[in-house]
Length: 128
Image (cartoon, rainbow, N blue to C red; front, top):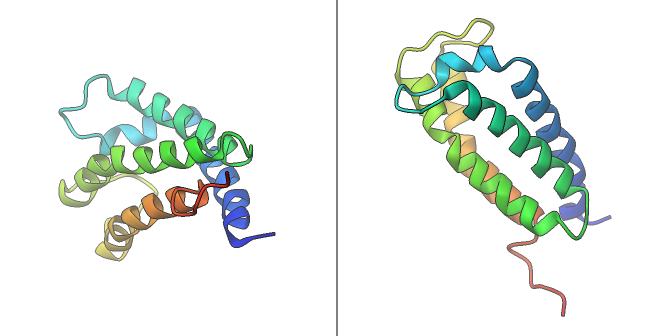
C-alpha cells in the first residue's frame, strides 16, 4: 500500500466523521461563522455534507482525484471561519481560547489543502 493510499484511508474516514459532526452539532459551529456569511446554519450543514462526500470520495478510486480537489477547496472555504474564531475573540464552549490552539490550527490549513490534493493524486503524474 502506498503512502498516498494510506493518506486516503486515514483522511477519508476523518473527514467523513467531522462532516457528520457538522450535521449533528451544527449549532455549536454558529459562533465561529463570520457575520458576513449568509444563512450560516445552512452553510454549516453544506460543509458537513461536503466533508462526508469528500471523505467517502477519497475511498473510491475513480472519485479520489475530484474528492481531493473538493476537500482542498473546502479547506480554503472554511478558512474565514477559522480566522474569525481566532481573531474575533469568539468563545466556543469546549474549545480552547488560546493561541496554542489557534496558531497550529491556522498553520495547518495550507497543509490540509496540500494533503488533500496529494491524496487525490494532483501532485502525481496521471497514468495513461
